Image (cartoon, rainbow, N blue to C red; front, top):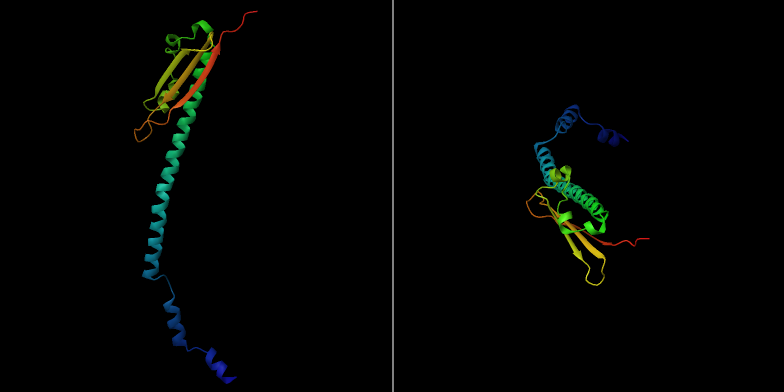
Length: 151
């Protein structure tokens, strides 16, 4: 029993020395923490930039899809005789689409069906440049219009 009391008992000098040793962070611990923080930031910053760039490209694609849908709706509601290349070439992009799609290019193509008379094919293509100055994948939409039977 006496040996246990002696083991548990620490001299005051030794106790003070132990307290002084673990009072704060060591320089090595601070350097390791700094290296870990730098590594995480080096991974996260490009990932955040990539997500931002992808979101912007997706938004531009959605704008282009809506714009092409609206233009196609205008084209197919024209009377059959007015569905001609010269008529649809007058259609233009909206101001908001022009602002949000850099260097946008809109192309219409109206052609008569070879097999079936009284039908016309309307094709619309919209493309633009992305942030790197490369042409983005275009948005294309095709529709057929036919002469309505008169009753």
